[in-house]
Amino acid sequence: MTSDLLRMVESTSLDGETISNRTRQIHANVLSGSKYIRAANFTKIHPGDLAFLFAEYDGRFFAGQVREALGATPLYFRLSKRMTSSGGKTACFTDRSTGRRWYEISASTTMLFGCFTGEDHRPIVASGMTCRDRLDALQRVMEHEIVHLIEMLLWGKSSCSHPRFHSITQRFFGHTENRHSLITPKEKALVKFGIRPGVKVRFQFEGAEYTGVVNRVNKRATVLVEDRKGRRYSDGKTYAKFYVPVQMLEAVE
Figure 1 (cartoon, rainbow, N blue to C red):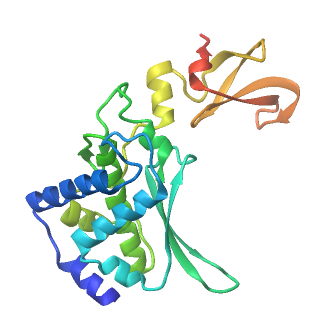
Figure 2: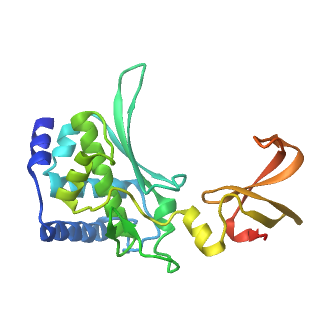
């Protein structure tokens, strides 16, 4: 029942040692229980691993009350390659025709696999806590997302910028910030290659050389090259659009 979860969320405050012991045990249980996550800096992951991680956190930190509050409402887990600026996301969906509701927790494989590669230019931080490895970072993401889910279940909406969210994440998990400061493709492109939106670049494509301007950076850079047959943009010029791996771009002074 949501009333039991509400009482727990409002009254619980865990000390640092308790939090550390529980999160370390979860870390160990994932490594021993997953068919895909075989190392702390894993290279494979399955949506079922997110479900396993959720169950571990619900059981050890919330006595199973999150699942209890969900009742018959489905909770799905998804891995996303398209999320390039956030480590995770929690959403509530409603079918307008039937009124059926369900929740979904997503984790970004692009962000996770982009960190702990041996080429990180800074420490990996999530929720204000320095992460030791990829699984550690995934745990911080799940902690953040499970609080989003709890707020949605108890109050109908959730925002990590509000004091209530910060209070819950701090009391249960010791979080000092409420954002996933993992290394994004955009940050990596700037630090490693000097590539950012607005930079003029040169690149090779199908044997020809092109010069254009970087419009945006996600997993690849979107480069606009002036072309009379291209699409017209707000500056009045027409451009052809290219999606180019960042490492194939050369900044032009």
